[in-house]
Image 1 (spheres, one colour):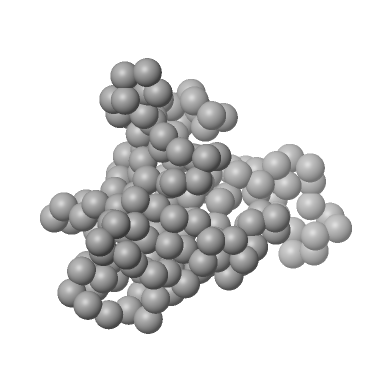
Image 2 (cartoon, one colour):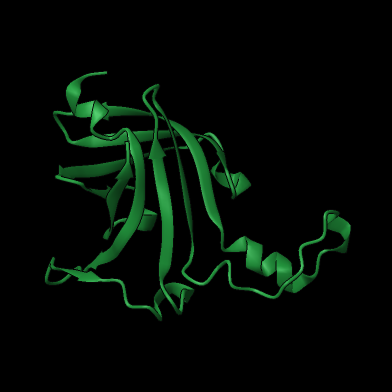
Length: 152
């Protein structure tokens, strides 16, 4: 992996989520009540030095629950299942196209079974300790996540 690719390696913490206004083309910060996340989102993305990555996003107050999660799935409550359903996780391999400034995640697994083995592309920019990723696929187009590097 070359020097540019090595800049991805490490643990990153979600700092900011933004949406692009389709009319003005200007970015604005995610407002907490949007898209079903009343307190916003938090999470981490991890890139290793052997082209593997993982991401985990959850509502900001995700771990603050009194719900019980039994060790057997047949006794879990519907409320607990709904709580778990907002945890967004996937593992992938990744490749970097430096000329186009695109990173591609080839998913190995995903918290949504329908998204296993999909490839997704992200426009990226790296400035200092900040990584910005912008999904290209239609479903999430106009979204940008800014990550701050936590460790190498």
